[in-house]
Image (cartoon, rainbow, N blue to C red; front, side, top):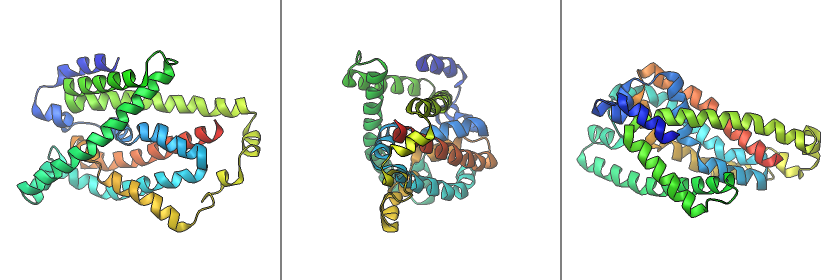
Length: 267
């Protein structure tokens, strides 16, 4: 389905700007959807949910760093869009020199090889789960990788924005139905709370403020270094759209990550 959507959208790609930054014409609503999906991936679905299952609601302090990073990104989004480059290395060359561009490119390649690898593995495990083992994790990983490469190559940012919004709708609808269903199956909110260890509902989970700082800082720095986010700022139709989209991104990510944590705790 996603490859089919990309084939359909590829008809609208007529220029370098269309492929790299969707013609710099992405409206706020679509930009919010694609920005949310920039951050929500297998790390949230498996890593974040797994931590919430083991440690409780305090897992959200890991996410809190990313939320605070987006507050900073709000003040950067308009300026990034005004510069109107294509990628972060382009931005580094404009601000500094060609050496900075090369170093930035190398850093992004190293980072995204790792990021893409665990996203592909996460996609493989999801396919294994939804097919009840008919597709092995390794085969699922190859299928996921092939699908992502194909739909990205077909239409670039135009394809990415469309597919991200499609995925975002599925994620939100899925967790909106899943959480109340699980709570009902367990026997209600009271039954859920009665069955949890005390530390699972404690704000700090038995830890101190220094622990909060330690777990929040990595995600704070990670999201500020998320090159895909800046490329999507370049794709916004104007500076105002870029800033408004960050507000929507913060709200969307807070909702999804909090709901995923609650799903893991209940389940």
